[in-house]
Length: 361
Image (cartoon, rainbow, N blue to C red; front, side):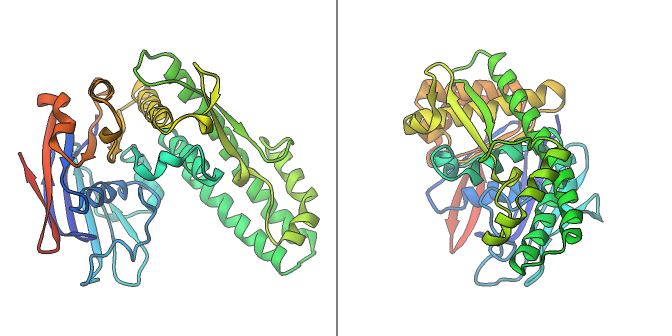
């Protein structure tokens, strides 16, 4: 199982400088609110493609007031080195093994899943968050899923520009719609495979967390899963899309539906605690499915213990340990991790003179 053996931070949010060693065990991180716990695991999340677990911009990551630029470097137990950084006013750069690389290449080096408090409203807010959740899960199984989503979004932005400019030449649209259809078909297939894998992993395990029945919903009926079907969808929608100035239908409008299987209740109608349990169940199912075919993923679980009673906390920790996953868990007090015993490396995070510090104990 690949795991982080060292993490080095430089001028990242509240961290001026830190070098932290790990030994593959679960890492239990505790400290007062605002001490820098979430900043620490956010730095780790940037060792995967995208904007990290809080979807920040490169400029936002820079420590204030210096704003000198920031860097995150890590070494895996395999010896592989990962680095991501940004200079003031520049976009984020990635290096793997000392060589420049695209962000999407990070997904092939370290599989990563996370759960943060902002996701607690996943089932009751807009579809965008659920699509993003599903696409990150799909990317964990197939790193190339990230390339498909980037290709689709790029072609759609260009198509939307034509629509806003009221361009009517069909040839311009056909080329872009062909790119969108090819990428969109890959996206839809990846999402479908991911839903099947998550449900199979839930159903095959005995767990203290409830199972969810998942399905993919489209805003309009139609043959949206295939290349040909998507081409037709886009072509037939041009007049309506031009009136709106944007692409109104396609994979970018799909939604993930979840039902608490045992109660046959939509997740949106469940209590806050039940929704949290369903989320944890999906993260564990994702990790379980990945571990069945390869290395267990790295898990980032921010403030997850505070929402669970002692029995469910113990069950969660047992499942993570059984997976053999390196996990980083945060909480305000050390007592939240008592059930881990010797299975965890413990870090206390403090804020001293405006910067975060880690103390191993």
